[in-house]
Length: 342
Image (cartoon, rainbow, N blue to C red; front, side, top):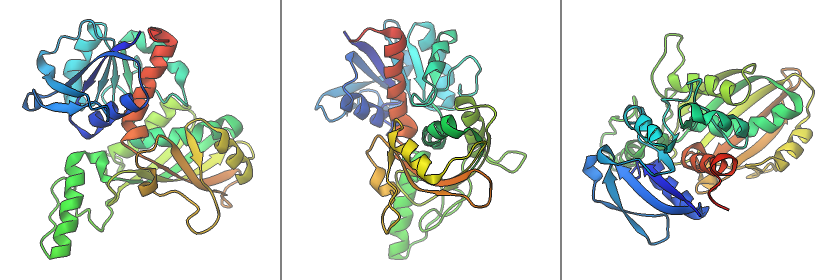
């Protein structure tokens, strides 16, 4: 026996990826509905690569009663309207927006890191999916934190344009093409030219000089991993279509060697360690696209602090950073609470 599942925002990048992953992982589904705004109503979208076509329904008029799980990829503004309606009708919402992440009554879940936190989901019948850059980082940090207790994290991100949606991907493509033919490369989605450039600015600036993206990484890591861990982030948009990368410096309370860390990471859930100290012995964003894993490379000891490590972390942000994590939360919810499927 399976579930009745809704994917809200099914026509967007993350929504389509949710459908792909539900199909790939053979999530137990008895019925599925795909929702979007009025302009997409009546369109058809394929359910993964199954050949099954689903007709898009208007989220504004959807009846949530009788549905078990809804995966939301519709942004905070729309989520504020429809998530409470779905939850009140008994449909558990797994939300990919930032709206509920810091709500104390809403669990913020990365299944490999804090699965037990999902037990509090009944307070609002809503579960939050973390920011894409946070999700992959905490997967890498968790087993190391368990082994030697992390005190401080300094992270610089190299985030792909798909994190800004289809408009971000289109802008990189169009600017790159324009530059090659000698046409202007004016920015529209981003604040500066993204093609052949990097932009140290993601989301809005806050009063302290950090951006909201950087703030998210700090507060979400504390909520998911450990409130005592100190985190500082610099988030940068780079001209890569899919795949976020992170250079992470970690300071521990207890001694841990690079060799010990490699052994731990090699056995950790959700991680693929690719760490050969030779040309090409590491993973880049191009190589992680379409994969479920969070890749870790270049693990080495930091000589500038006592008990320090530095590592490189790469993941498909549309997957582990969004859609995959949401589906993994649904699987976790089924195992721990709903238990309709075998």
